[in-house]
Structure formats: structure tokens, C-alpha cells
Amino acid sequence: MLIGAHVSQAGGLPNAIERGSALGAHAIQIFNQSPRMWRPTAYGDDDYSAFREAMSPSAIEAVLIHAVYLINCASEDGEIRDKSHTSLVQSLTVGAGIGASGVVLHPGSAKQGDVGQAIQRAGEVISTALSETDGCELHLENTAGAGGTLGRSFDELSALLEASGGDERLGICLDSCHLFASGYDIRTIDGVAQVLDEFDAAVGLDRLRSLHLNDSQAPLGSNRDRHADIGEGEIGDAGCAAFLSEPRFDTLPCVLETPGPHREGPTSEELALCARLRKRGQTARRRSKAASA
Image 1 (cartoon, rainbow, N blue to C red):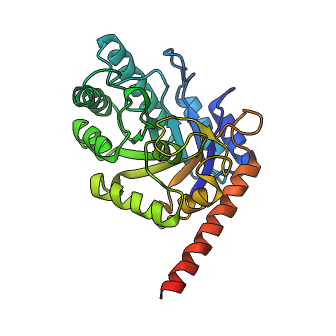
Image 2 (cartoon, one colour; image 1 turned 60 degrees about the vertical axis):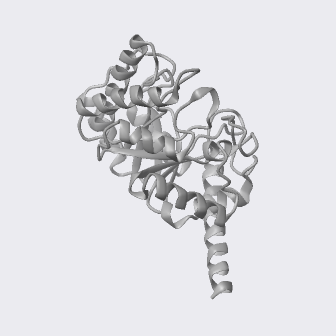
């Protein structure tokens, strides 16, 4: 597992590598522009080359781009869908330029409208954006389920993949906080295993491409997206250890988006804690297996 963090790219793309390395990260996630503005940051080949050169000698093995929050591929407003399409194409273009593992996307929201129709609208925008770009994958992120957001269940994620044409570049990013908030209990080793079995049956493990690790301030099934620092929320140390040690997550980039003690994001101490929790979970798995043998 490539444990890492969301970091800032302020001052230039290579700075994200420096910040990730300072945390001891093996994976990073960045925004390719301000997450709350439509206006894109103008990057060119020199920026992409500088990023790749900075990444090459580092311990960072995977990079994700998080698409901007304004995107709503499912909007009933055609102008919003057009802006979402343009922004998504930009994210995928930057992703290809820097060699990112994928662009993580919140698929959109039906708001008060029909969910099935919203999924079809989102699928059309996503399919078109993929057809106009090359190289970089697109990872649809599961949601906590508030406000009509799409992707709150594995069945909805499957429907989104189908509506988007099933392109091989399409994958899923599973967020632990969102899973928990939408009713998937991942606080134990057996619980994580059962959830992954359900995901495999509905979507397929071949579509699982990346992870977000966040504890949850809100209780199970609350549909509230409230991230907590690792071990300090409702999922807790044991739940995070179970998530981190799930064998089917091995080799995937696993990015923390936690608030941090000073509201400045994950710290090196938190990443080190995750490494310890992963080992704790792996030890618990071995003991459980030996006891049942």
C-alpha cells in the first residue's frame, strides 16, 4: 500500500513533491487548480517535465489529482454540465502531463431530481471527457450520500460506470469516511472484508484503483461527510487498522485528507501512525488465521 496525503501544489507543481516527501509520503494527491473556481491554472510541458524530474528520485510512487469541487456532471443546468466537462478535460490533461495514476472525481448530485436521470447525465459528460483525452485514468469517488450526491452505494457506482460507457480508464476511489457515513461498517477486519465482497459483487475489484483514508466525525449511516484525524473519530484506531491491512488494498495509493491538528492537513506523525496501524492490523489478521487453523 502506498500511504500518503493530499498536499498543496502552491508555487508550482514540483513543490507538491517536496511537501509530500517531507511528510514521508509514498503517494500524494493535489488539485490541478483552485478547487472552488472554474478558472484553470495554465500548465505547459515545462511544468510537467519539472514535476516528473522532481518525482523521479523521490519515494513518491503514485500521484492523484482531485478534480474541483464545483463540478457537477449530473446537473440539470446545461451550462453547469458544460463547465464541468471543460474542467474535467483539463484535470485529465494535466494528469496525463504529470503521469498521474488518476483523477479523482465526485460524480455529481441529483439534488432533488430523479437519480436515474442524473446518473445518465453524469455518464454522458464523463464519457465525452474520456473520449477527448488520453492516458490518465478517472476514479469515481464514493460519496457520503448527503444532498442527492451520486455514488452513495456500490449499485450507484456500478450504474455510473455503465452510464459512462465502461471505459477501461474508469475506476473507483473508495473513501473510508464516505463508506462509513453511507452505512458500510468498516470498523472490524470482518466488516472490511464483507464490504469488499459486496463491492466485488456489484462493481468488480478490477475497478478499484485508489483509496482515501479518513476517520469520521459523524456516526455510521449519518450521510454526513465530516472527516476526522486518524483514530480520533467514529471509525477509530481499530477500524483504520482493519482498513489499512485489507490484503485486497495492497499496492493501491491510499491518500489521507484529514484536517490535521492545526487545520493544515495531514502530518508526518499521522502518516507514521498509519504505518503502525497497518502493521497492527496485519498482525491481528495473522493471529486470527492461526487461531482458526
